[in-house]
Amino acid sequence: MAGAPDAAGGRPVTVWARPAGATGPWSRHATATTAPVQAPPTEPAGTWPPAGAERMAVDYPRLAANGHHYGLAFRAVSALWRRDGEVFAELALSPAESATADSYTLHPALFDAALHSALLAEEPGERPREPRAPLACTGLTVYATGATAARAVVRRLGEDEFRVTLTDPVGRPLAAVESMVTRAIPTAATARAETYRLTWRPAAPVHDASTEHELLDVARLAAALPADATPPERVRELLTAVLEAVREWTSDARPGRLTVLTHNATGDDPDLAEAAVAGLVRSAQSEHPDRIVLVDRGGVPASPGDLETAPGDLETALRSGEPQVRVRDGLILAPRLILTDPPTTEPPARTPRERCSSPAARVRSERASRGIWSPNAGYGTCC
Image 1 (cartoon, rainbow, N blue to C red):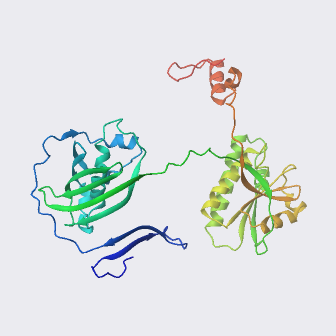
Image 2 (cartoon, rainbow, N blue to C red):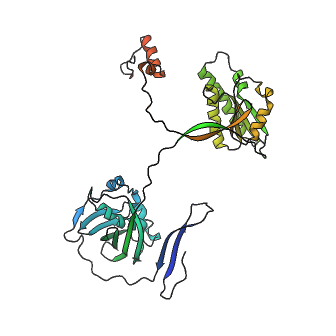
Image 3 (cartoon, one colour):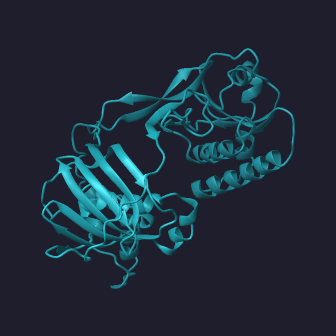
Protein backbone atom coordinates (compact mmCIF):
# COMPACT_ATOMS: atom_id res chain seq x y z
CA MET A 1 0.00 0.00 0.00
CA ALA A 2 1.35 3.43 -0.94
CA GLY A 3 0.45 6.56 0.98
CA ALA A 4 0.15 10.13 -0.20
CA PRO A 5 3.39 11.89 -1.24
CA ASP A 6 5.00 14.37 1.11
CA ALA A 7 6.37 17.78 0.14
CA ALA A 8 9.57 16.22 -1.22
CA GLY A 9 7.70 13.63 -3.29
CA GLY A 10 8.35 10.68 -0.96
CA ARG A 11 5.60 8.12 -0.33
CA PRO A 12 5.28 5.70 2.60
CA VAL A 13 4.85 2.09 1.43
CA THR A 14 3.80 -0.97 3.42
CA VAL A 15 3.72 -4.59 2.27
CA TRP A 16 1.01 -6.82 3.76
CA ALA A 17 0.24 -10.49 3.15
CA ARG A 18 -1.84 -13.43 4.34
CA PRO A 19 -2.31 -17.01 3.13
CA ALA A 20 -4.35 -17.44 -0.04
CA GLY A 21 -8.01 -17.97 0.75
CA ALA A 22 -7.61 -16.94 4.38
CA THR A 23 -10.05 -14.57 6.06
CA GLY A 24 -7.90 -13.70 9.06
CA PRO A 25 -5.97 -10.48 9.63
CA TRP A 26 -3.22 -9.31 7.28
CA SER A 27 0.40 -9.35 8.50
CA ARG A 28 2.75 -6.47 7.77
CA HIS A 29 6.01 -7.72 6.31
CA ALA A 30 7.87 -4.56 5.26
CA THR A 31 7.79 -0.78 5.38
CA ALA A 32 9.58 1.68 3.13
CA THR A 33 9.61 5.21 1.81
CA THR A 34 9.93 5.89 -1.90
CA ALA A 35 11.44 9.05 -3.36
CA PRO A 36 12.06 10.48 -6.84
CA VAL A 37 15.09 8.83 -8.40
CA GLN A 38 18.27 10.84 -8.53
CA ALA A 39 20.61 11.06 -11.49
CA PRO A 40 22.86 7.98 -11.80
CA PRO A 41 26.51 8.35 -10.82
CA THR A 42 28.86 9.29 -13.62
CA GLU A 43 32.02 7.63 -12.31
CA PRO A 44 33.90 5.93 -15.16
CA ALA A 45 33.99 2.15 -15.05
CA GLY A 46 37.32 0.75 -13.96
CA THR A 47 38.99 -2.46 -15.02
CA TRP A 48 37.07 -5.68 -14.49
CA PRO A 49 37.81 -7.66 -12.52
CA PRO A 50 39.75 -5.17 -10.36
CA ALA A 51 43.48 -5.59 -10.09
CA GLY A 52 44.57 -7.79 -7.20
CA ALA A 53 41.21 -9.54 -6.83
CA GLU A 54 41.41 -13.26 -6.02
CA ARG A 55 39.29 -15.63 -8.14
CA MET A 56 36.90 -17.73 -6.05
CA ALA A 57 34.96 -20.87 -6.90
CA VAL A 58 31.18 -20.57 -7.29
CA ASP A 59 30.10 -23.45 -5.05
CA TYR A 60 26.33 -23.57 -4.49
CA PRO A 61 26.38 -27.12 -3.01
CA ARG A 62 28.57 -25.78 -0.18
CA LEU A 63 25.97 -23.10 0.56
CA ALA A 64 23.25 -25.76 0.64
CA ALA A 65 25.27 -27.77 3.15
CA ASN A 66 25.34 -24.67 5.36
CA GLY A 67 21.58 -24.13 5.20
CA HIS A 68 21.29 -21.81 2.17
CA HIS A 69 19.33 -23.67 -0.51
CA TYR A 70 19.05 -21.85 -3.84
CA GLY A 71 16.94 -23.16 -6.70
CA LEU A 72 18.18 -23.10 -10.29
CA ALA A 73 16.47 -19.77 -11.01
CA PHE A 74 18.45 -18.06 -8.24
CA ARG A 75 21.84 -19.58 -9.01
CA ALA A 76 22.78 -16.55 -11.05
CA VAL A 77 26.39 -15.98 -9.91
CA SER A 78 28.61 -17.07 -12.79
CA ALA A 79 32.03 -15.71 -11.69
CA LEU A 80 33.41 -14.47 -8.38
CA TRP A 81 36.40 -12.58 -6.98
CA ARG A 82 37.27 -10.97 -3.67
CA ARG A 83 39.78 -8.41 -2.43
CA ASP A 84 40.13 -7.21 1.16
CA GLY A 85 36.56 -6.45 2.31
CA GLU A 86 35.04 -6.42 -1.17
CA VAL A 87 33.38 -9.08 -3.32
CA PHE A 88 33.08 -8.82 -7.10
CA ALA A 89 30.60 -11.01 -8.96
CA GLU A 90 29.30 -11.52 -12.47
CA LEU A 91 25.61 -12.31 -12.59
CA ALA A 92 23.48 -13.78 -15.38
CA LEU A 93 19.89 -14.96 -15.35
CA SER A 94 18.97 -18.32 -16.84
CA PRO A 95 17.23 -18.18 -20.25
CA ALA A 96 13.87 -18.93 -18.63
CA GLU A 97 14.21 -16.07 -16.14
CA SER A 98 15.66 -13.71 -18.77
CA ALA A 99 12.44 -14.07 -20.75
CA THR A 100 10.51 -12.44 -17.89
CA ALA A 101 13.06 -9.79 -16.90
CA ASP A 102 11.08 -7.00 -18.56
CA SER A 103 8.26 -7.66 -16.09
CA TYR A 104 10.42 -6.48 -13.17
CA THR A 105 11.99 -3.21 -12.22
CA LEU A 106 14.91 -5.34 -11.01
CA HIS A 107 14.61 -9.10 -11.38
CA PRO A 108 14.56 -10.63 -7.86
CA ALA A 109 16.88 -13.49 -8.84
CA LEU A 110 19.48 -11.01 -10.13
CA PHE A 111 19.25 -8.87 -7.00
CA ASP A 112 19.37 -11.89 -4.69
CA ALA A 113 22.41 -13.25 -6.49
CA ALA A 114 24.24 -10.01 -5.77
CA LEU A 115 23.39 -10.36 -2.08
CA HIS A 116 24.41 -13.99 -1.69
CA SER A 117 27.64 -13.56 -3.64
CA ALA A 118 29.22 -12.56 -0.32
CA LEU A 119 28.33 -15.99 1.06
CA LEU A 120 29.85 -17.70 -1.95
CA ALA A 121 33.05 -15.73 -1.51
CA GLU A 122 33.70 -17.10 1.98
CA GLU A 123 36.31 -19.81 2.19
CA PRO A 124 35.14 -23.26 3.34
CA GLY A 125 35.20 -23.29 7.12
CA GLU A 126 35.63 -19.51 7.29
CA ARG A 127 33.35 -17.65 9.71
CA PRO A 128 30.96 -20.57 10.30
CA ARG A 129 27.58 -18.95 10.87
CA GLU A 130 23.93 -19.78 10.91
CA PRO A 131 21.83 -18.96 7.81
CA ARG A 132 21.05 -15.26 7.52
CA ALA A 133 18.43 -13.19 5.69
CA PRO A 134 18.12 -9.47 4.79
CA LEU A 135 16.48 -7.41 7.54
CA ALA A 136 16.78 -3.75 6.54
CA CYS A 137 17.51 -2.27 3.12
CA THR A 138 18.37 1.44 3.08
CA GLY A 139 18.97 3.68 0.08
CA LEU A 140 17.84 1.29 -2.66
CA THR A 141 17.95 3.01 -6.05
CA VAL A 142 17.21 1.46 -9.44
CA TYR A 143 18.57 3.30 -12.48
CA ALA A 144 17.63 0.91 -15.30
CA THR A 145 15.01 -1.82 -15.66
CA GLY A 146 14.81 -5.20 -17.38
CA ALA A 147 18.42 -6.25 -16.79
CA THR A 148 19.32 -9.89 -17.39
CA ALA A 149 23.02 -9.69 -16.51
CA ALA A 150 25.05 -7.52 -14.17
CA ARG A 151 28.28 -6.95 -12.31
CA ALA A 152 27.99 -6.69 -8.53
CA VAL A 153 30.32 -5.10 -6.01
CA VAL A 154 29.57 -5.96 -2.37
CA ARG A 155 31.45 -3.96 0.26
CA ARG A 156 31.32 -5.01 3.89
CA LEU A 157 30.44 -2.12 6.21
CA GLY A 158 30.19 -4.11 9.41
CA GLU A 159 29.70 -7.56 10.85
CA ASP A 160 26.20 -7.85 9.34
CA GLU A 161 26.05 -4.83 6.99
CA PHE A 162 26.91 -4.44 3.30
CA ARG A 163 26.77 -1.90 0.50
CA VAL A 164 25.79 -3.30 -2.90
CA THR A 165 26.37 -1.75 -6.33
CA LEU A 166 25.09 -3.20 -9.58
CA THR A 167 26.22 -2.19 -13.07
CA ASP A 168 25.53 -3.68 -16.47
CA PRO A 169 28.26 -5.72 -18.25
CA VAL A 170 29.82 -2.54 -19.67
CA GLY A 171 29.80 -0.63 -16.36
CA ARG A 172 26.64 1.51 -16.61
CA PRO A 173 24.72 1.88 -13.31
CA LEU A 174 21.80 -0.47 -12.75
CA ALA A 175 21.05 -0.27 -9.02
CA ALA A 176 22.63 0.49 -5.67
CA VAL A 177 21.89 -0.27 -2.00
CA GLU A 178 23.53 2.06 0.50
CA SER A 179 23.07 -0.38 3.38
CA MET A 180 21.84 -3.96 3.64
CA VAL A 181 21.63 -5.37 7.17
CA THR A 182 21.15 -9.10 7.68
CA ARG A 183 20.13 -11.14 10.69
CA ALA A 184 20.32 -14.79 11.63
CA ILE A 185 17.35 -16.96 10.72
CA PRO A 186 16.07 -18.46 13.98
CA THR A 187 16.51 -22.21 14.01
CA ALA A 188 13.73 -24.00 15.82
CA ALA A 189 14.89 -26.36 18.50
CA THR A 190 14.61 -29.93 17.37
CA ALA A 191 11.35 -31.08 18.80
CA ARG A 192 10.92 -34.58 20.10
CA ALA A 193 9.07 -36.61 17.54
CA GLU A 194 5.54 -37.18 18.74
CA THR A 195 4.27 -40.73 18.79
CA TYR A 196 0.58 -41.50 18.46
CA ARG A 197 -1.57 -44.57 18.86
CA LEU A 198 -5.12 -45.37 17.89
CA THR A 199 -7.83 -45.51 20.51
CA TRP A 200 -11.62 -45.66 20.44
CA ARG A 201 -13.76 -43.05 22.20
CA PRO A 202 -17.52 -42.99 22.76
CA ALA A 203 -19.24 -41.07 19.97
CA ALA A 204 -22.01 -38.64 20.89
CA PRO A 205 -25.09 -38.41 18.65
CA VAL A 206 -25.45 -35.43 16.33
CA HIS A 207 -28.96 -33.99 16.36
CA ASP A 208 -29.18 -33.35 12.60
CA ALA A 209 -27.38 -36.51 11.41
CA SER A 210 -29.43 -38.44 8.86
CA THR A 211 -30.05 -42.15 9.28
CA GLU A 212 -31.10 -42.69 5.66
CA HIS A 213 -28.83 -45.34 4.20
CA GLU A 214 -28.39 -48.44 2.09
CA LEU A 215 -26.78 -51.39 3.80
CA LEU A 216 -23.89 -53.50 2.52
CA ASP A 217 -23.49 -56.37 5.00
CA VAL A 218 -20.07 -57.97 4.51
CA ALA A 219 -21.14 -60.92 6.70
CA ARG A 220 -23.75 -61.85 4.10
CA LEU A 221 -21.10 -61.68 1.37
CA ALA A 222 -18.76 -63.85 3.45
CA ALA A 223 -21.51 -66.42 4.08
CA ALA A 224 -21.89 -66.90 0.33
CA LEU A 225 -18.25 -67.90 -0.11
CA PRO A 226 -17.29 -71.57 -0.45
CA ALA A 227 -16.70 -73.22 2.90
CA ASP A 228 -13.24 -74.39 1.82
CA ALA A 229 -12.06 -70.97 0.62
CA THR A 230 -8.51 -70.24 1.72
CA PRO A 231 -7.70 -66.96 3.55
CA PRO A 232 -6.20 -65.35 0.41
CA GLU A 233 -9.23 -66.42 -1.63
CA ARG A 234 -11.56 -65.04 1.03
CA VAL A 235 -9.75 -61.69 1.02
CA ARG A 236 -9.80 -61.46 -2.76
CA GLU A 237 -13.49 -62.39 -3.12
CA LEU A 238 -14.69 -60.01 -0.41
CA LEU A 239 -12.60 -57.10 -1.74
CA THR A 240 -13.89 -57.68 -5.26
CA ALA A 241 -17.52 -57.80 -4.13
CA VAL A 242 -17.26 -54.72 -1.92
CA LEU A 243 -15.36 -52.74 -4.55
CA GLU A 244 -18.07 -53.47 -7.11
CA ALA A 245 -20.81 -52.39 -4.68
CA VAL A 246 -18.98 -49.17 -3.72
CA ARG A 247 -18.38 -48.27 -7.38
CA GLU A 248 -22.06 -48.82 -8.15
CA TRP A 249 -23.12 -46.65 -5.21
CA THR A 250 -20.76 -43.76 -5.91
CA SER A 251 -21.65 -43.70 -9.61
CA ASP A 252 -25.28 -42.76 -8.74
CA ALA A 253 -26.68 -39.72 -6.96
CA ARG A 254 -28.65 -41.80 -4.45
CA PRO A 255 -30.06 -40.29 -1.26
CA GLY A 256 -28.52 -41.15 2.09
CA ARG A 257 -25.27 -42.98 2.63
CA LEU A 258 -23.89 -46.41 1.88
CA THR A 259 -23.33 -48.20 5.19
CA VAL A 260 -20.70 -50.93 5.00
CA LEU A 261 -21.05 -53.31 7.93
CA THR A 262 -17.97 -55.37 8.80
CA HIS A 263 -17.41 -57.83 11.63
CA ASN A 264 -14.22 -57.82 13.71
CA ALA A 265 -12.32 -55.69 11.19
CA THR A 266 -10.74 -53.75 14.07
CA GLY A 267 -9.20 -54.70 17.37
CA ASP A 268 -6.22 -56.66 18.58
CA ASP A 269 -7.11 -59.81 16.64
CA PRO A 270 -9.03 -58.69 13.54
CA ASP A 271 -10.44 -60.86 10.82
CA LEU A 272 -7.91 -60.34 8.01
CA ALA A 273 -10.44 -60.36 5.16
CA GLU A 274 -12.80 -57.96 6.95
CA ALA A 275 -9.86 -55.70 7.89
CA ALA A 276 -8.86 -55.57 4.22
CA VAL A 277 -12.42 -54.54 3.34
CA ALA A 278 -12.30 -51.79 5.99
CA GLY A 279 -9.07 -50.43 4.50
CA LEU A 280 -10.62 -50.38 1.03
CA VAL A 281 -13.69 -48.55 2.31
CA ARG A 282 -11.60 -45.92 4.12
CA SER A 283 -9.82 -45.19 0.84
CA ALA A 284 -13.17 -44.81 -0.90
CA GLN A 285 -14.34 -42.46 1.87
CA SER A 286 -11.44 -40.12 1.19
CA GLU A 287 -12.59 -39.81 -2.44
CA HIS A 288 -16.31 -39.62 -1.62
CA PRO A 289 -16.67 -37.80 1.72
CA ASP A 290 -20.03 -38.01 3.51
CA ARG A 291 -21.32 -40.73 1.18
CA ILE A 292 -20.06 -43.88 2.92
CA VAL A 293 -20.16 -44.98 6.58
CA LEU A 294 -18.06 -47.84 7.91
CA VAL A 295 -19.52 -49.72 10.88
CA ASP A 296 -17.61 -52.58 12.50
CA ARG A 297 -19.37 -54.98 14.88
CA GLY A 298 -17.68 -57.52 17.06
CA GLY A 299 -17.83 -59.60 20.19
CA VAL A 300 -19.78 -62.54 18.75
CA PRO A 301 -19.32 -64.74 15.68
CA ALA A 302 -20.40 -63.05 12.48
CA SER A 303 -23.89 -63.82 11.27
CA PRO A 304 -26.05 -62.42 8.45
CA GLY A 305 -28.75 -61.88 11.07
CA ASP A 306 -26.67 -59.57 13.28
CA LEU A 307 -28.73 -56.51 12.40
CA GLU A 308 -32.00 -58.17 13.22
CA THR A 309 -30.70 -58.96 16.72
CA ALA A 310 -29.61 -55.36 17.44
CA PRO A 311 -31.29 -52.97 14.99
CA GLY A 312 -30.77 -50.00 17.30
CA ASP A 313 -26.98 -50.23 17.06
CA LEU A 314 -26.93 -49.29 13.40
CA GLU A 315 -29.27 -46.31 13.83
CA THR A 316 -27.22 -45.06 16.78
CA ALA A 317 -24.04 -45.45 14.73
CA LEU A 318 -25.49 -43.39 11.90
CA ARG A 319 -26.70 -40.68 14.30
CA SER A 320 -23.13 -40.19 15.49
CA GLY A 321 -22.23 -38.47 12.21
CA GLU A 322 -18.86 -40.27 12.26
CA PRO A 323 -17.51 -41.74 9.00
CA GLN A 324 -16.23 -44.80 10.88
CA VAL A 325 -17.47 -46.37 14.12
CA ARG A 326 -17.00 -49.52 16.09
CA VAL A 327 -19.87 -51.21 17.94
CA ARG A 328 -18.91 -53.10 21.08
CA ASP A 329 -21.37 -54.18 23.79
CA GLY A 330 -23.90 -51.61 22.67
CA LEU A 331 -21.39 -48.73 22.72
CA ILE A 332 -20.70 -46.66 19.60
CA LEU A 333 -16.98 -45.85 19.48
CA ALA A 334 -15.10 -43.55 17.08
CA PRO A 335 -11.37 -43.79 16.26
CA ARG A 336 -9.08 -41.13 17.68
CA LEU A 337 -5.31 -40.61 17.73
CA ILE A 338 -3.78 -39.90 21.13
CA LEU A 339 -0.23 -39.10 22.19
CA THR A 340 1.75 -41.94 23.64
CA ASP A 341 5.23 -42.25 25.07
CA PRO A 342 7.83 -43.17 22.45
CA PRO A 343 9.73 -46.43 22.90
CA THR A 344 12.73 -46.03 25.15
CA THR A 345 14.52 -49.24 24.21
CA GLU A 346 15.58 -50.92 21.01
CA PRO A 347 13.35 -53.75 19.77
CA PRO A 348 14.66 -57.18 20.75
CA ALA A 349 16.76 -58.98 18.19
CA ARG A 350 15.00 -61.77 16.35
CA THR A 351 16.19 -65.28 17.13
CA PRO A 352 17.15 -67.67 14.33
CA ARG A 353 13.87 -69.53 14.86
CA GLU A 354 11.90 -66.28 14.57
CA ARG A 355 13.76 -65.40 11.41
CA CYS A 356 12.92 -68.82 10.00
CA SER A 357 9.23 -68.25 10.75
CA SER A 358 9.04 -65.43 8.21
CA PRO A 359 7.19 -66.17 4.93
CA ALA A 360 10.41 -65.89 2.91
CA ALA A 361 12.18 -68.32 5.24
CA ARG A 362 9.30 -70.79 5.04
CA VAL A 363 9.49 -70.65 1.23
CA ARG A 364 13.21 -71.37 1.39
CA SER A 365 12.65 -74.25 3.80
CA GLU A 366 9.88 -75.72 1.66
CA ARG A 367 11.97 -75.45 -1.51
CA ALA A 368 14.94 -77.08 0.19
CA SER A 369 12.82 -79.95 1.54
CA ARG A 370 11.62 -80.60 -2.01
CA GLY A 371 15.16 -80.54 -3.36
CA ILE A 372 14.65 -77.30 -5.25
CA TRP A 373 17.68 -75.04 -5.21
CA SER A 374 19.11 -72.37 -7.47
CA PRO A 375 22.49 -70.80 -6.65
CA ASN A 376 21.40 -67.66 -8.53
CA ALA A 377 18.06 -67.24 -6.78
CA GLY A 378 19.48 -65.38 -3.81
CA TYR A 379 18.41 -67.92 -1.18
CA GLY A 380 20.65 -68.61 1.78
CA THR A 381 20.75 -70.90 4.78
CA CYS A 382 18.71 -69.84 7.76
CA CYS A 383 18.79 -72.21 10.70
